[in-house]
Amino acid sequence: MTLIKNAWPSDRLSQLILAASALFALVYLFDDFGISAPFPANVVIKAAGIVLLAIYALRQDHPVLAAGLALGAVGDVFLALDESVLPLGIAAFGLGHLVYIWLFARWRMQAGPRGGMSRIAALAIAAFGLVMLGWLQPYFGELRVAASVYNAIILVMAILAVLGRSPTLALIGALLFVVSDSVLAVRLFADQLEWAGPVVWVTYYLGQFGIALGLARARPGSAT
Image 1 (cartoon, one colour):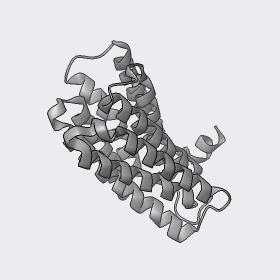
Image 2 (cartoon, one colour; image 1 turned 135 degrees about the vertical axis):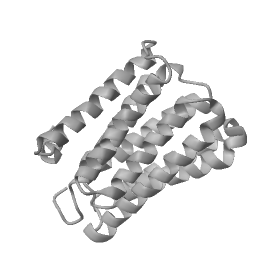
Image 3 (cartoon, one colour; image 1 turned 90 degrees about the horizontal axis):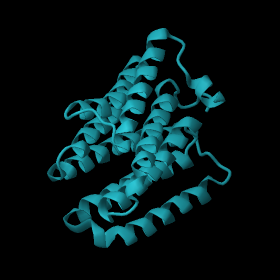
Image 4 (cartoon, helix red, strand yellow; image 1 turned 180 degrees about the vertical axis):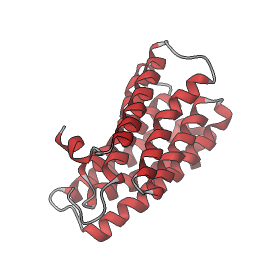
């Protein structure tokens, strides 16, 4: 809670934006329990929480972060639609992670390395990603290239978050994103873990929330 308290904005409007974002995320969580709003309201609710995080980033004068979050919201919309647009969802999330890669790389270059066990943690993340990628290859089908490229992108994002001295909340958010996408990939492509919908959504939203709250107000060289 101390991490959130330290990163929490002081102005009332920003606080309301973050609270509204969390509320939309909570409402959408019921979709995984069979209590969902009718289409397209459910899509709007799903994307609204991340759109509000992007608006919060803009209020903190961080348009690059806002762009990454907005691309995540676009990906949310595509994933909530027909399977025929799934590649567009993967592309949107991939572009969003490229934005995050740029941000975490900037922290690594300007704030320096995290030190400690960060290199071992980075190797563990890379090993996990390679194992997951190898296991899921037979299930990717026509999306093998797109899914494999996306897997590589998110791993690079998480590794840079671990290696650089980015804010701890953002690091936690990046790792939660890896958890969320790993569970989602197993559920979506391997048709397993059908019960894991709430896990995917909670870890995904908290991942985006952690990255947004961790990076929006902090700048390289500030306290992490």
